[in-house]
Length: 277
Ligand code: NAP
Image (cartoon, rainbow, N blue to C red; front, side, top):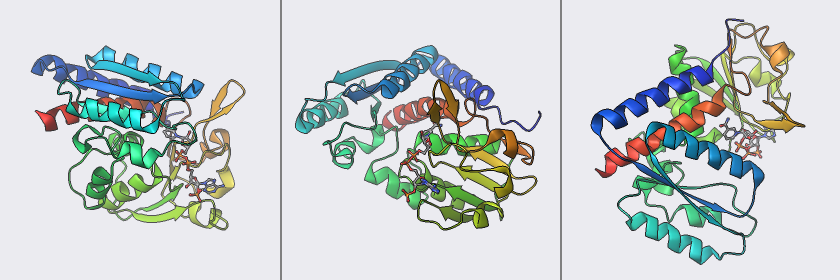
């Protein structure tokens, strides 16, 4: 099929570009990741981030605490990293174990080192359309649309999901490209009314097969952010088999948005380095 958006291919190109910049400019950016507790999925994500960093020449440090650590000690560690000039990016691997105040902890990160773009300052700057560090997955979605020449001006874009990590930053990024938005969430009634009108449909809900063929129009561009584990199989939120028959472009899962998230993290670490130097 020639309507597949190949996130793996695009992400490899981005990684090569980053590697080239690091080599040519002879810089050594560094990412520090804080992980609290034992979460198998987080272990995999952190391993992937580490490999991706080392592959392009970004130094990587993992600071892993067990879940008995106090919030104050995590905060002290972030403050230490804020003051360490060899560290350019700080990322707290989410989710944190129950009982930890994610908002409080994340907002201790110096905004110029906040490579996940989740501090109040970066969120505010995104809303105000000031240059800032933008969350990696929404950035990856926008890069894919750009790479495949999807012009968003005046298009009806339907976004399913309004999380702080994915949906909300995407609202700002899509508005900036002059899209007309409809935003659906778990309290929306009959989301088909909105998805059916979409020229571009972006889904980040975390429900396999939420979007089926009857819910989209012919020629739609579909970005499936969802990652759902069914046994040993990864599935998106979109019924790929059915929807891909109507879509002009569609991301697979895996191999769509996922690899772009990691590539955009690398981009953010280099951007953070440049802001600081
Ligand atoms: P989240 O925080 O759980 O948010 C899910 C959003 O979807 C919420 O806004 C929720 O509405 C909405 N929603 C849930 N069920 C719905 C339904 N039946 N109809 C319409 N809306 C519904 O999840 P997230 O962090 O945004 O992640 C979403 C998905 O993307 C997950 O599968 C996650 O694993 C995946 N993800 C992938 C990447 C990647 O790199 N590819 C990165 C991050 C996340 P309410 O606001 O009303 O609760």
